[in-house]
Length: 178
Image (tube, rainbow, N blue to C red; front, side, top):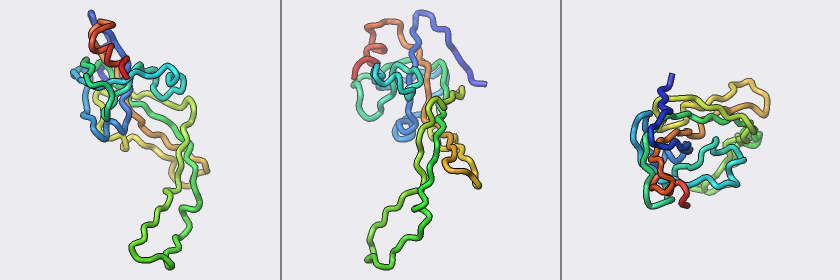
């Protein structure tokens, strides 16, 4: 059972989405109760309806974003899982015709799998700590399987962050600065 602290005296709670690739590239894992400082970008009102942000009001940007960081205490973490319909490309099973190629020629081949998000098929898993790597959370139907088949992947973490309850303060201002 994941630890959750949802009562904050004189503090405001905000929901922040931390995408898997942002964590895997340049992120530092964190735990419930830990103080963090992140560059946050506000979720655009047009983006809230697509479900990608899971109701978050901001997302972590490790590759740019505001110059200042929002500092707050982590109160809850949920790993976000997305279900996908996986489509198989039969051309990936065909043998490559390499006889006519010069040595050193680069040949690029598809993986044979294309993933399409299943609308409304996201789930939240409460955890005590955010993982550094999300690949361990992938689940895939095993052969024999029908096409398309289902793949469930972790796509990030939805974090409840406690920040100072000051609408004009650095925490909220950072979330609204693009």
